[in-house]
Length: 378
Image 1: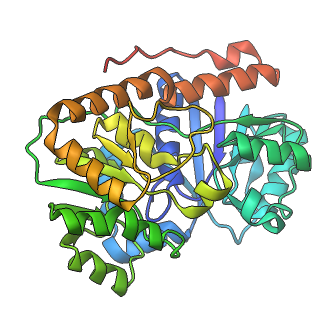
Image 2: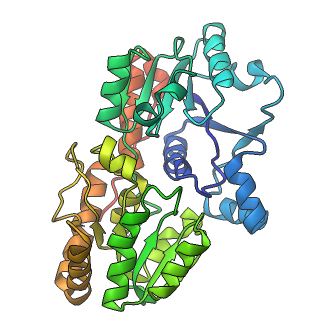
């Protein structure tokens, strides 16, 4: 099957979490014998920030970690050669972080070339910025993949597109794998961006203050930390590591005893059941995970077994201390979390779901020809 995907970036995950899941999905599709082209715009925001801060050598490093991934670039200021790009496509997926004009044009080309066309939404704009969603012309799309049931219901209520499927993010479990025997460099690590201050209070309550009170050795990675935020980390004795390429996350998780998940406020308040990519990758790596409160409304995991939930900052400090002192608890969380990922939430599971959707849309069976991968062991 010939698959063409339009995303903001496959190369860069600088403040761009969509690249995480996309890399794993493309790898899985390739593994099954599909021909996949991923297009990203020249001068994309995330890639430009990556190059500005860290240089072109990061692209060479990316290729070393992902030798089979080779994103294509297009000039967003020029008319695309749709015959060349889409002429042989069986499936086209367009992510919501694309220009509405490009999206509409790809929709118009559908009748000409006959491919299946799917929209992919991994953001909270459906509830936080409905006026932006109104800019998207999905009239020629066969349906939308959305990353949570709450988003699916909104699409259906608003009648934005004819079909909607819930398609959660997941872990590339082969890449994000446990290595808990690695010698530890510290106690706690957190990987996440500061963002626009929408979880500032939560980061103080569930990360900075507990670490300071416990006096443990901790490190934080991420971008867009203002000077005040970096000072708060330093005051708490937390080392700031700056941007961390996502392909190095497994190596970092292996060197720490526990991590935490502090979801952004829009996800907690408006999007119950959507955990974002970070917990999937942490659990896949087998690092014990403690979360600030979020509602697993879709029963993706088993709270208390796969990870712990801290009801407030004091409870977070207590649970961090508990995991650090109890090897049995840490091992149980590590084992259970990895097991749940392998059973339910790998990129292979999501490609299985995508293939089922394509059958539902009437794509010819001979074009699917999945080469089923071997089942990984915990």
